[in-house]
Image (cartoon, rainbow, N blue to C red):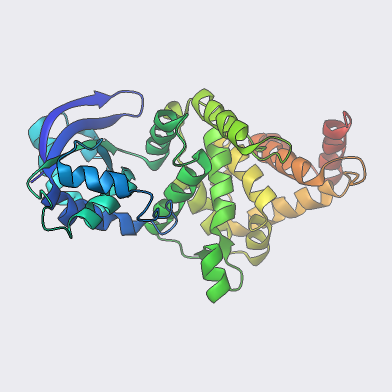
Length: 343
């Protein structure tokens, strides 16, 4: 069984945190299967890559802890070793491996050996938080500077997992691999929703730059997430996705939101004016984005980076929706012209 040895509370991400341990046999039975919940997670390394760890396991090494995560509003409030232990045992199938996938894969490989020490212990860090956004914040801040998984990859994993638990009525989300096998007409790309999530977490619409090497860009992303003070955000990303799903009942609105630059701008902008925007009907939203597009035609494509300004202006449009919603297309055009004058 998984025995909790110590517990505390992470006040920043409002979560229960515990340290425990379990036998290798328990880890293989209950933790190893959780790896399969994340098709987009970092690919399993070759057997050769972890051959040294496998040999060490058979000789009795102590492996670094794996991290087991849960998202539960009630579970996040637990404060005792006993209550957290009971929660873990009851909800183990709903957990997932935040860190340690390769270690568990190697443990599985080692278990085929006749000398495998099934009774030895592996230590487990446990995080139970109330929201995916807060969990991802902790993932990125704790893993900063480590090589195994980039911030973007972590966001991709959490985006897909978040969508798995959402009841979407008007949109279908597909991975790149799924579109290759069978493209659903009008579907959203997981990659685009992941880009929107990145912008939500960083509170910034410009998170890609081909002129900056990946390693430096990852550092910038981590810095932006930490500066965004996500733990005090009033709006969850899941609520924005619910709006995207609601507005997509209108075909024109869905077509507009399927464009990544629009979706990114809408995501960041709607964080600031969520209460107003959520009162719109799908048809009213469609009318507003039609006005936006009409005004956006005033932006001279030969003088500006069109993609960048589509993200920035759509973010501005929804961030200051109380004002822009009352303006005509011509008045919005004039405002957009002033915003792009510097270029």
